[in-house]
Image 1 (cartoon, rainbow, N blue to C red):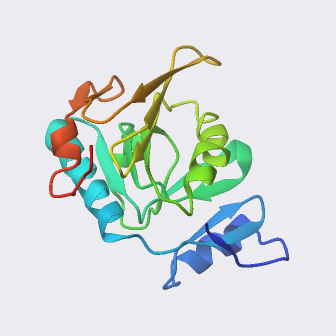
Image 2: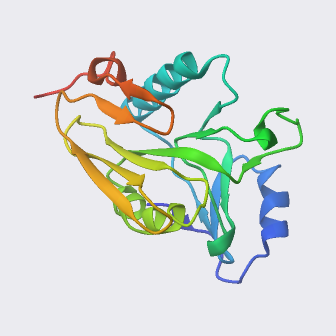
Image 3: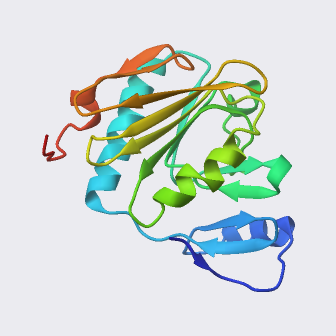
Length: 192
């Protein structure tokens, strides 16, 4: 679980300024700052596999894949998060300006679930991410291969939920691709 850093409210401007020089990543939720913990080798391998599969599929498209160190701003919650993987396809991400550190309009957000952050990913982040008008899908991937969950927007206020179990490929309409189970967990030991 991210550790709470401050008890006094911090402005978004101060948070963003601090993040550009900090050795530690922090998430920001309505004036509160939370330090991010490091990731396990297993977590990192799944994130890398996801990003690699997405990058290969989206090569030549207007979409860009971002991982872990790029912030996502959810304006309606006055929050900045570091999703494990996200895809944005707007004109805003085309130039990849060197002074930009924040994505505001992803079509896909993926969190790889960890024991310390799973409840936050399944509760707070789910509620927050769904407020992004651009978001089509939010995928939570279980590191064990069991119990991954996909939320897909069906209207402005409605979402469909899909559960994936061990061995099942994951269909993502936001990027028009299937994530193969074997590719997702390549080089990651699993127990059926």
